[in-house]
Image (tube, rainbow, N blue to C red; front, side):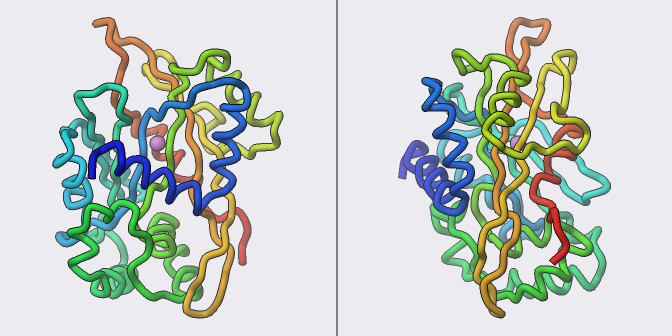
Amino acid sequence: MTIHQLLEKMWKDYCDLNPAALKIYNLFTAEGEKVLNDHIALRTFQHPRLGLKKMAQTFINMGYRECDEYFFKEKKLYARHYEHDDEKLPKIFISELELGKISPDLQKQVNHLIEQVPDSVIQSESFTYSGRPWKMSHRQYLEMAKESEYASWVAAHGFRPNHFTVNVNALQKLTTLQSVNAFLEKHQVVLNKSGGTIKGTPAEFLEQSSTMASEIEVRFEDGLHKVPGCYYEFAKRYKLPNGKYYQGFIAASADKIFESTDRQTLH
Ligand code: NI
């Protein structure tokens, strides 16, 4: 598989699972915009079998290199981003839940899920869009969400893109994040307001906004239930004093964007 084929498969998985995201993509193309991706984000558990490093391996094998690392103390997450020499390819942002820092109860639940993952799934080139490889109940999902929304998201959806991100610098008409957000709100898209609609400033060289993930129906052991799916993100980058666009991420902004998959209502 080539990197382009892999990214295409990940995009298809994301659109199939989240019709709301595809609808937003179509809004941009209907405006005559060509949508390029700034980055794609993946989530996993910090575990020797299938942690961040393991997930990154597929991309390393396809020419990506390891870049900056990020810490999210409160959410107990560690993350890294990866870049490709071909600057047209999206950056890959991978985060993992630090299992050593969560409660023994949640650790037990997560380890029980991981035990069910066959090695063949982890070794496969399709690992990053393979979905959920374990059995679990909606009751278990709610239990996990009480301590970590992040853990419950990975538990419900498994391994697949958490979000794609529109590269606002590459848009022709909607050239500011303000205009992108106004355009989305005009089309009744709900944006994540945690920490303000726009996270980051030009002085930090990166502005980001995101939708709130729409709820999608997921099959659990105890039936079909609606849970937050994936969201769509929008990023505008600014030039560093050296004239090059900043390619990293801002932990304080990403911290708020993680909340785009939080449950909005109590079930
Ligand atoms: Ni992102």
